[in-house]
Amino acid sequence: MLTIGRYRARSAETAADLHAAQSLRALAFLQRDDPPDADAFDPFCTHILVDDLFTGQLVCCFRLLQLPNGADLPRAYSAQFYDLSALSDFAAPVAEVGRFCIHPDARDPDILRVAWGGLARFVDKNGIRLLVGCSSFKGVDAQRYLDSFALLNARYLAPTHWRPEVKSPFIVRFDDMQRPNRIDRRAGLRAMPPLLRSYLSMGGWVSDHAVVDHQMNTLHVFTGLEIDAVPPARKRVLRRVAAHSAA
Picture 1 (cartoon, rainbow, N blue to C red):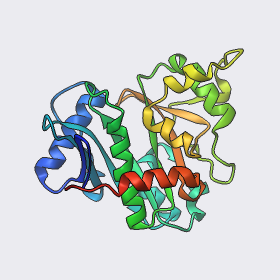
Picture 2 (cartoon, one colour; picture 1 turned 90 degrees about the horizontal axis):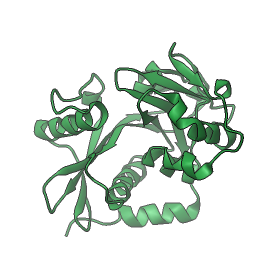
Picture 3 (cartoon, rainbow, N blue to C red; picture 1 turned 180 degrees about the vertical axis):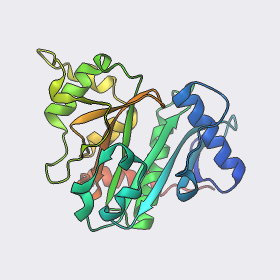
């Protein structure tokens, strides 16, 4: 349990906790209240919830699938959409971060800060050396994200030796998109999901294409963050946040 100000990050412990997370996911990703968003990966994951202690509302959630190493990535949710063979030689523990969402009515930046604190605590406790996942852009119109995808293509592609290959038949290749004459970096970053911006600020990287996910009504990119690549100053900040606990 981790508490900062009005927000508390904790692991789901009951069926009611999981149902609350699945309901928030349905609201955030599918714009519906019912039925909850649930899939076959949920039983194998640790689910992190962020509660607003003032209102009692669940304001953020995500799930973590822990894997022994890169050779186990075919078990991951993202392996449905990306060929992750290049990462099979990653020899240290991996965690897939999935279904990360913040309540549509929640705007406080401290929510993301507390969520990252909870994630940092999980990473340290379990010796995770690589975080992976799908970073989702709302909607399936790639033209809305020209600056974002051009920026990712220019500055944030995965190293060649780790880069995911195409698996899904429904993709948008960054190189095939009509690029703006001049990339508007601010606009590109502003249109990205907050979690992806956080990954990139710490040395994260992405696939060279986005997958069109009609079921979730998103465009998503495979995202990786090697823990050893996180700048030392940023690690210290995250660990300070993670050190907070309930009184």
